[in-house]
Image 1 (cartoon, rainbow, N blue to C red):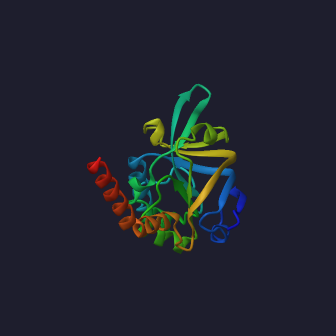
Image 2 (cartoon, rainbow, N blue to C red; image 1 turned 90 degrees about the horizontal axis):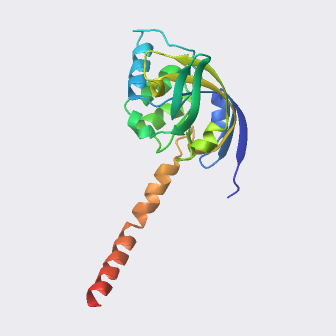
Image 3 (tube, rainbow, N blue to C red; image 1 turned 180 degrees about the vertical axis):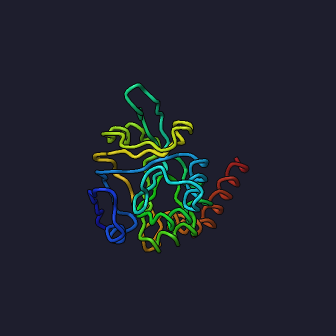
Length: 210
């Protein structure tokens, strides 16, 4: 299968998202929005429920689960590095946020559950998998901090809008049509489960006879 690599300017549109396929590689230029906090996701849900205004425009944008080491400085907000956090922590929040904000790209590491995948199919949204432990690679793409939401929160919980250049390569792990590399890997593992157990039993028997 030919590896497809796309260099895209964000925000991504629904049509662009639907053109991507699970397994494609993506390099991002443009604007991304990041956060790593469960309290941030809970607060976002309160915003979409009308309890408080959003701190920045998010409709039609992306939301990446990227943690960071950041700090307030006299000149503004400084993101020293960023690295993906596990998206499955946010499974209870993401379906509603994807639909309410019409998100077209989400991402981090570890994927999202089927409820989120269903929401992604509705809005035209892909899940991009970031390289775990790739902080140096990801951080090198940061060009500018554009906006910071909720300065009353801990720095790594804040909602941060960044301008990036050459962020990636990232993998389309779940596409806007419901195809998931995580589900594929699980199916392969399940199909080999009996074979793996038999091999382990044979290895134990050999050790016991020795």
